[in-house]
Amino acid sequence: MDDKPAGSALDPAIAARLKRDDEGLVCAVAQQLGSNEVLMVAWMDDEALHRTLTTGRATYWSRSRKEYWVKGETSGNIQRVHEVRLDCDGDTVLLTVDQTGGACHTGDRTCFDADILLGVH
Image (cartoon, rainbow, N blue to C red):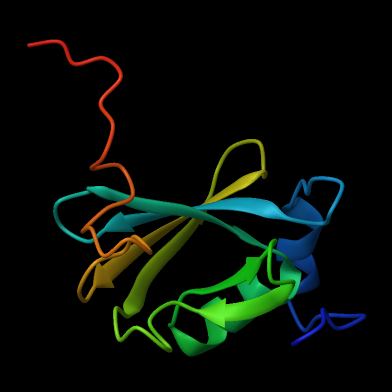
């Protein structure tokens, strides 16, 4: 397990703008470069955001496994990060990525392919 480090090298100016949940996490939405297709939602702490900003590879915190994971490290379905934005409230980051392969753990292109709850035509 890759336990969370006590501190992070995240720029203090960025860290000060984040509004984290009780577990120290912010929501991270991954969106496809060019098409703006929403691919997935995951979670980041300060260290995951720092790693993402410095490596250009989407890095998240797994709430279930309690460890960091780099998208595509085991599956090959890599997310190359082109842009990271912070929303107006500071509680969500938007990653614009170039997705290789499926973004969903099921193998689907996006995590939002399975269930349409309302579709207006």
